[in-house]
Length: 518
Image 1 (tube, rainbow, N blue to C red):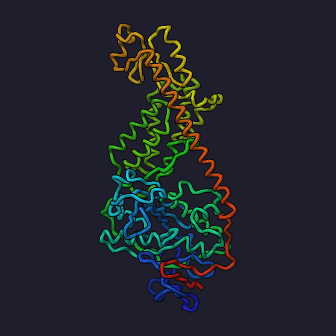
Image 2 (spheres, one colour):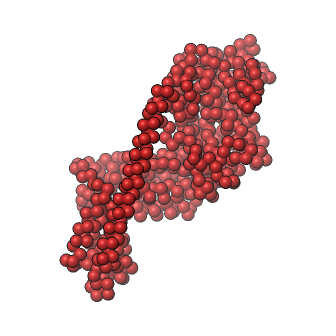
Image 3 (cartoon, one colour):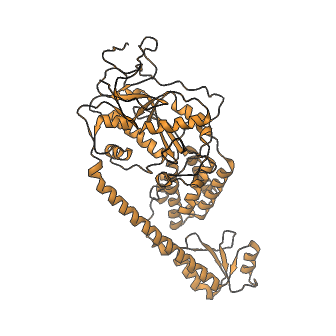
């Protein structure tokens, strides 16, 4: 294959379907694209394009892409630093090849927290940019790098490479912001608005690196699939991977910025973590603490929001990825079933509770099997479940029946025999003369009087009511936000393909670089 200089003004080598140059030795090299003004303001990336008007280039479905997104402490690459980075490798036909995500210690005070949601405590102990650089080199090589606003990524990577003293490679780079402005007509070109146009859905956890990376992946594959005429890749070939055979994959510290109870708390948490293709090491201490915390929650029969967020922080500290989390959760589930009484002896309430645990772990088939044939559980008011998870012991005296009823009405359970899992033992015999009181003392269970027990029970009930009021306020605010977003739809999510694509334009401080592709 040869390139006719009368038809192409791009400084490219045409890629064969496998991603390698079809004419490395024979294709002419051009000094640069024809521009009407300015210079393309990129330092690390060599610009690449998708065009509907060229029969040169190749079908992008056959190429490998690496979508990248960054979160930074501000907008000045000379002063601010990267604090989160994510990469998603995929083929143009939509095949996913692997994900990578980690928060990064910016080695400076945090900023722009209101945008990306990261506090100083979230990045404390995370790997530095120098530590993640070998993995980044692996992930961006042998691929066409893609970003929504590639110029922003280029500026910050250039600054970070400069701080490490390493020379940055020259990767081929495709900007979905430049591409959509050339191909689509619409009132806004934010990743959020374009994702909404093509999918009809909002970006989950927008402005977090992995979520925006996944959205960029979806956007590019949708552009390729839904273009009114075939898009062709025009640009440099994929760069070779560096020789990092002796460099093991580095640790990561991925985060879960949100969770969903209907989807299952731990299941939705795991989906926020990357499905990696590299073998990243884990940190033993936090990993073991994750397993212990999860085992205790399963033994207690409930996974609360507080427990889920504790597990999310431990997973980040341990350097877990999505597969590691799924595997750890499944092993904990199997261990719980192995050590539990025969499921055939479970009451309906116990089966409902265990099915709910399976849902939170993302074990849908297990949850469905456990729930099969069970009547729909009665919906409990929040105040009725205020003491759920409290296992209490009572002396066998009639005077305590009122306290027992109070505890049971609000979700507590009464221990038939005393074990170390009992929260407190209620008795009027504080001297420990009864056999039950003596047993509680032997096991180290806290012994309280009926008066103290009632005070503690009512305090727990009030705390649950207060928490429920706070959740209701948060839900009302969320509904208000959703209503505002709904009002924006008609104005900002009405993109349409241009009848004739425009020449790509690159923004810069001194003007606009317009590239003539045809």
